[in-house]
Image 1 (cartoon, rainbow, N blue to C red):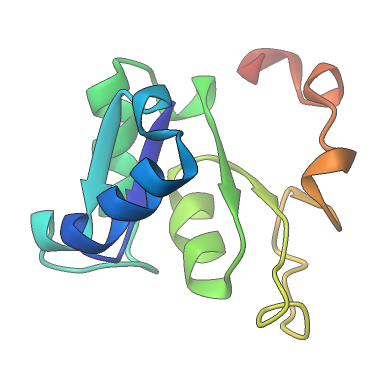
Image 2 (cartoon, rainbow, N blue to C red; image 1 turned 90 degrees about the vertical axis):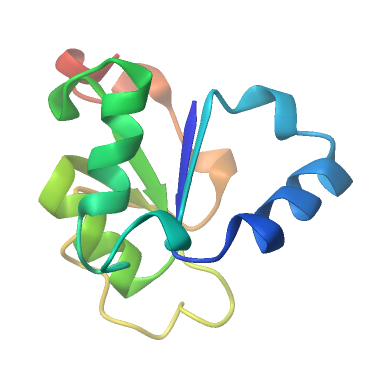
Length: 113
């Protein structure tokens, strides 16, 4: 699992630690590592490269329009909007869900499972 965030590593890491999930991520690609953040796809491109997989062998979970656009440029995108992004047009997503509870990994295209 990789993380691609336009936010700084100094902002991301404490939240992952607080939630007890930091050890799940093999790579953290954050805003200070790139010249352009989302919607530019470089953060996602760096994340899949660091994981050693091709973009077609991965999928992105996103909650924002800029994140969706960055992820779409890099591969398959599942969007789960949050309270602040729920009103945006996120129909560019390959899969648009209301919550993580709806995510059925077995239903994703075979090439990304």
